[in-house]
Image: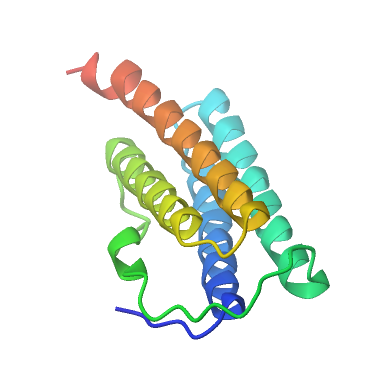
Length: 151
């Protein structure tokens, strides 16, 4: 479990997670089964980069007044995925990992929204959670179409 003592530490954690997602989707784009999925992975990488930029703007410019709330433990480790992409992953394994990562990101942002010190930050985290749930749905559809229907 990771303890946070400030909003900046939470933002740093979220920024790092977004960069990991960018790297993950860029890697997957190189092993995509189709040009369509390559485009989807590249698009998701760009969207995750946009999430990171939003979080960095808040941190660097103080766009949101954050207050002095002390966060002891958000159990953020509960919202991360331990498995990493490997060169030898099958397309099915990559889709499953992508779904798990998006679910974890959704849960992370939902948890951050529930503990946000103000409405602006709460709305930001809720919006990020919704975007991550849309990503998960896209991978579920892809899994259904290309894995379940082929078996």
